[in-house]
Length: 501
Image (cartoon, rainbow, N blue to C red; front, side):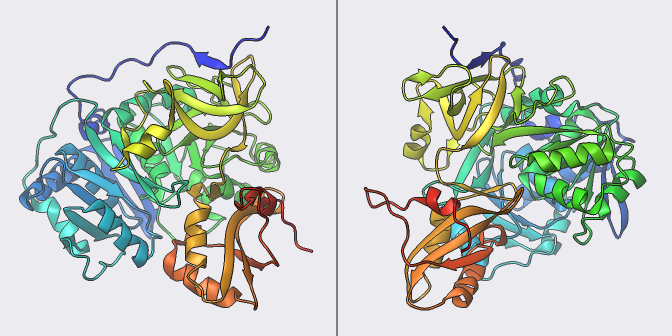
C-alpha cells in the first residue's frame, strides 16, 4: 500500500518577536557594502548606509504627511529605485503599501482606488498621476521630497500584523488584494537554501522591473536580508543585454522568467560563464529551453513553483538536483499535501497542491473578501489550484491548473476579466479567453468571439483601453459558436486545444 502524498520534514524556525519587515531586510548589510546597482544610462550604486538613510527618511516623510498605522498607500511607481524605498519606508512605520503593475490602464487604476480606498496614491518612476482620483496623490517630485524628512524609527510589533498587500487576478474575474503579514519575509529564508543557494557575497542580477513582486522578493529583499548585492536593469528592452550585463557586472546568480531564458537561448547565450546558476519562476520552463540553456552555458537553472498568496515553496536548488519534468521538492520547513476529494492522494497520483495553514509565508487573506478566503481552505490545508503529482522521493510535477487561469509571462490572468472587456465591444454576441500554444514552448492569450462580422480591430482597441498589456489577447479569433458543456458553461479546455484551420 502506498503512502499519502504529504511532505513534512519539520517546521521552519519561528519568526522573532517583536519584528518589522523593513528593519529585518536592511539590518544585515555593512554600511559601506553595495546594496544595489541600478544599471541603465550608467550605473547608480547604493551603499547599505545610503539605502537605510533613504528608507528611514522616506518613512519620516510619510508620517509628516499625516499617514498613520494601517493607512493604505497605493504605489504607482515605474522601474525606479523609488519603488523599493517607498515600499520599505511604508512598512517600517505601519503604513500598508500596495504595489501595482506599471502596465495597468487608467480604468484599472480607478477601479483599484475605488475598492482599496487608499489614504494616498504615490506616482513616480515615469508614471504620471491620474487626474481626479478623489483621493490624495503624490507626484514624482513629491515622492523624492519625502527623503528630506527626519528619519523615522521602524515600529516593532507582532510578526502576524498586516505589512503589505499585492494584487493578483482572481478566478472570479475580479483582481484581489492579497494581505501579507510582516512574517512573510522571514518565511522567505526557506528559499535561501531551498531554491537560491544564496550567500552574502552574491551579486544577484534580476531581469524583472523594480515593481514586479518577483523582483521585489527574489531580486531585492532576499539579497538585502543576507547582505548581498542586488542588480536591476532599467535600460531599453533588449534580449541580447543579459549576458553582457552578467559578464560586465560579475553576476553570480541570474533570475528571470522562462520567457527571458527562451529569448536568450534563441539568440545564443553568451556572457554567463561567471554565474554559479540561474533561477526561474512564474511559469513552467519548457524542457527545450532548459536543455538549450544547459547546453549553451554549462550552468544549471533552478525552477520554483509558488503563487502570490504564499510566494515560492516548491523548488530545485544546488542541494536538490533538478529532475526532468519536475518543479522540485518542498523547501525544508514547508508542509505540503496533494489533495483529492477525500484528502491526500497516493504518490504519483494527480491532485491539487496544498500547503499547511500554519505556513509562516501564507497570506492573511484577501482584502474584504472573507468568503472567498474561506473557500481556499480544505480543512487544515490552503488549496493552491495547481494540479500536480508527487513521487515517493518528494519531487512535485506540475500538471496544470484545476481552473481556467491563464499565464502571461509569469502573471496569472483571469479569463473572466478578459471576457468582460471583450463583451464591451458592440456586435460581440459571446466571448471567451484561453491560453493557446502557438509554437513549442510559447503560448499566448487568445480572445475567441461570436459575431456576425469581423471585429478584431475594435476588440483590440477596447482591450487596449481596459486591460493591462499583459492581460490583452495577442490574437482574436472569430468562431461560429463557443464550445459549451451540458451545464451551459464555456469549455475553455476545448479552446486551449484550438489550432488554426
